[in-house]
Each structure stands twice: as C-alpha cells, then as structure tokens.
Length: 83
Picture 1 (cartoon, one colour):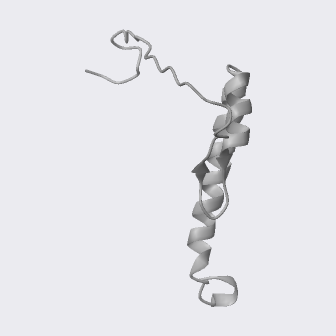
Picture 2: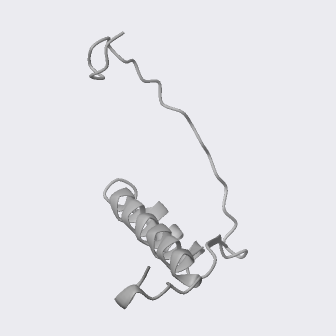
C-alpha cells in the first residue's frame, strides 16, 4: 500500500526498477573511470538510460573491441568460505 493506505500506482514498481538500474550503471561507470578514462568517456556518450536502457555508440567512430580475460589464482582460505 502507498500513502494513507491507498494502493500504489502500477508504474511505481517499474519506476523504482528503472531508477535502480540507472543508479547502478552510473555507479559502475564512475568506478570504472578510476581505471579506464577513455572507456568511460565512450560509455558516457553511448549509454542511454531512461524508460529503456540502450548502448548506441556513434557509428562514425568505428569502435574495435579487444577483450581479454585475466587469470586469477584463488588461494584456499582467502575467499572466507570453508571447503
């Protein structure tokens, strides 16, 4: 229920979800900015939030993605979980 026991509008849940997604994306991009400024500049222009979230880079820029994976070694007991 909403204010004074009235029913919430049906769009309230969707608006909360939309704002949570927008806030999370903005937080992630801000954290990424500490490590890769060029990428965050690109994402600032290519990510669009609102009713829908989209990734729409400028087609004139010609982006070439190179993705690599990091090798991580986890030592037993460092994760805080028991085996």
